[in-house]
Length: 514
Image (cartoon, rainbow, N blue to C red; front, side, top):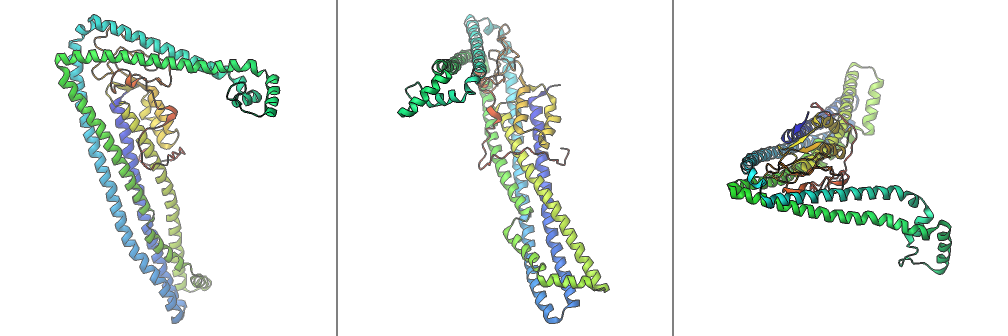
């Protein structure tokens, strides 16, 4: 079962909202936990004060009470300030979420306007398809464009075969350390530099391995793919130029038929979409900074709060406090036992809170990394116009099991995005007004124009650095989107200021249905 581009992007958006929602929930839990730990410590201080009143003489009691009270008062004041900082940080994240929701809604409106104009333009093109299809000049250019596209495909296939041969047939040379030593040194070429003794010894090595006879063969093995790729690139440029001529004729015909205002409105809608995508990136980065600030405050990362709590913990860990508690444990009075039990209970609750906090901190860190990876994927998705209604994906698990695997860390962001690209296909009419020589997607040919009912190439386009198995994208029409291919090496092009580039893929479980 396939899924259309807009539905696919909506699923990614929903997953993003789930991640952000869980981040917010965890941050709030961490903030409350930090406050609870501080209050538990305050309660523990009061219990020690009561214990001191029972067991110590007034002079020692006063000294101990003063040490605890000063730390307790400072911690209480910092707790109030901390609550205020957390509240402000939470509001900042909420404001950024509101900005993103508004921008996403505006983008949806712009996308709908684009699709409306696109439908109008395609209907107009269908009305005039017969006239342009039977134009002898257009027909000749169409045949030429198809021929050049096939030539480019054949050139690329030859290039890839030569590169495969280079890899396989060159292995014995590369595996010979003596041959590769001489090769890297430039032995037998004008670039070779060595003193007389080294030249003499290298000559012996060259005779031993038959270097003089092997070097021309290895040189040719390396040169052929380079020359073929240069030739393939020239053929691709020729095909792109021929496609551009067809696009120009199509646009002129549609404009003459009254389509210019519609086309310009569609281009304006697309410009609006592109501008909104840029604003969304900025808003996402602002939210990321706000989320980092919230996480810092939620985890008690405010230096003043940390210092105050640390002083209280230090005060409760004094040697005389330890001695007081130890002596109270050794005596058997009802009052002592009650207070000691309450102290033990407070410390156990604090320990549980701290353990839960550590777990939640790790979970929050992983969620933040996964959110940034999903932002990268969404950027590439929109950049390649995969949310266009004419874009579809043959694998519906991309928004089901595979999405869950990615969110849980079962597959990397690069692998997940690669599966999106491999599954993607364009329906007929992939240029903005329906034109374009048929470019295959993963070996599937397509005729893209209403007036090219007899046309469209039928060759299988090979995967390459130019095509990457991806069909022609609507971006800009013509060959512009098809030859550029997918980002190599699973890289992402989303601009991200201050990114560390650290994308861990360790497994984790989230709430909210992930």
